[in-house]
Length: 316
Image (cartoon, rainbow, N blue to C red; front, side):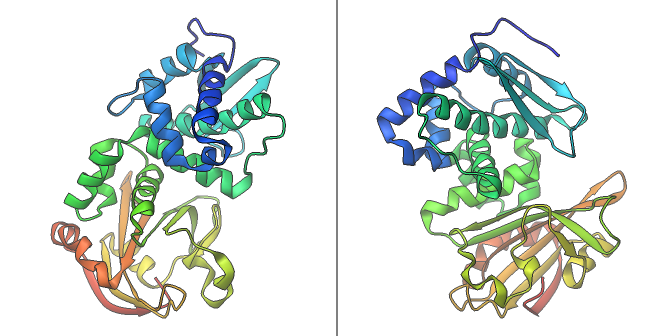
């Protein structure tokens, strides 16, 4: 691992957390946009931080003792260890730089939860899926400026692949940023990233993330097919329009996805984008807005010339 002169581990983060709590209170710690905005300002971060900068930030400003690549543990992309006063952050060695950047930012948020516990013993961070979602949202907000990203998102017609290519960040980071930016605007938006995994049964993809704005309350989950709101790591059947996009290697535009009565009785407009890697479809990126807002997709639809499906019922 590479290592430069570092502070006692976590001291920079400790100072930030103390200042943040004084200014905003402990509840605001669970608001990723607020946390990321203050984080950028406190550490003087401008533009889009890249891998080398993030490593130097971690070592020289955040007080992380050691950071570097390692072989993945149990399929994870990133992890950290705390021993004594030292924190060591590791990320998957064979990921591409955009994914490493997102992983580092993601782990920084999780480390901040540990630092908060050290400062305030009564503090209890969220866990499991909720922690993963907050860390993803923080990482995306930290890495991509809100105003610039929103302008680009509107200009490209909510196109996740175009945004991925411009910002050089993972698809999970991109769709997470899209959702968090729309959250305070009360804009309805849904996105998921499905990945072809060699360990998955034939005919299934693995859900790597799911985002909905406004946040989905699962009181009616049982009313619809489970894969419409997948959990991280859930196997999703590759059928209907997902299968079409995969087999034909072509974007699919479902103009009206009906039967989702929990979505305020409005149907959705859905775009499925296959991502090719090594000559094969590696991922399927799915974005959706209410049908009444389908004009937001216009520029994307015109640029990708998708296969158009006029109507589908409760099945992507």
